[in-house]
Figure (cartoon, rainbow, N blue to C red):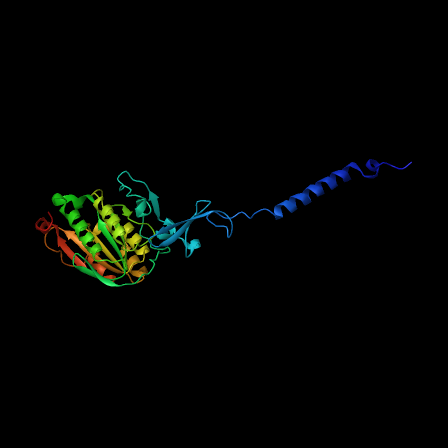
Length: 310
């Protein structure tokens, strides 16, 4: 009489065959599973993508919530690309109000902790159309402009005329721009607020109107620190930076002038200094900043603003 199958195959052999069969099934199943992608990486095909039109073209949002530009989605800059690793995004009690979705990203207050200028910059879309733009009698030629102005508590002196004069002159400068130019605005004290992060929007009527709302909502508060706003302005890669402050030499961290001079790719930096009384003689931070960066320097006696700003 023949032996049964169970007697021909030992118990350990049956277990081995069973586990081998399970292993083969697992390998086969894994071969047909979709590849997991790193955070922020988009699938080449499939999924739902929503498109939206902005001032600088189309951008898209995929099903994972990742936003990317039409031209080069993999290189859409983040806040860390825009600024340096020594800057961190913070939320402050005195942060400016959010203007609304039509103005792009919400206002972000960024706190600076150093003057290192390493990192990747953000370029505008290069529409061309170079023109001469004036701001407090300083003049810059280009198509991309960044206006940086002081909002520290001292700008509220003399009945608030210094800050009101800065706002009025800035808005007059914006009126000189056409849709062929691009711009951005940074208001600062010991920290700073960027109107539109990571971009230089076109100077359309709508954008200039939204920028005017931003400017009007700036209030004087806090101390003064030059490093953060100057670094953020350079990262936007404009042709011209207009920098206005009533700050003093102590507000510039050691080495900031040299860092800017060494790493500036050719941006013109014009400086406007608000002070009390006659213009001080000799070199100072703002005069040197302008001279080292192909810019112009102007001194404004805030006492005389009494007769100019109502």
